[in-house]
Length: 183
Image (cartoon, rainbow, N blue to C red; front, side):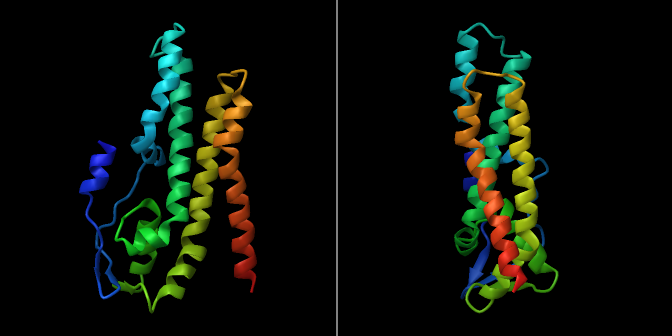
């Protein structure tokens, strides 16, 4: 359903590099919804738990599923924050591009992808990036908390491979943003 929703989602109207900002921009109420597209990746671990005798409605399975929802949502949000300019040029409405357009709509009715590029970068750096970094940290913390409830033998490997790179990228992004905005 998530892939179908993405395929049928309206694209931005772009004419001569000018994006007409829609009056209604999509909002994600729960950031975990970002995981829906890739949540199928949680089926293997959940099937394994079921095979080991855990009930699908058990607290262990629910916390593993919550871990994957948070981790995969963080991964999707990180990807959207990395690809925001390409997504904008392609007319895609993601969590990040919608936020850029929301801030731009306060002062403009359209954005030109060539002549307003500096303005778009500043919107991202000043207005959108801090919120995205915050959301990424919250999702990573929730994922870690869900994993800590399970105490698997190799949880450090899972956290180091899935969560730590996102947290490290957040730290680097904050440092870079602060460096750029200082000057």
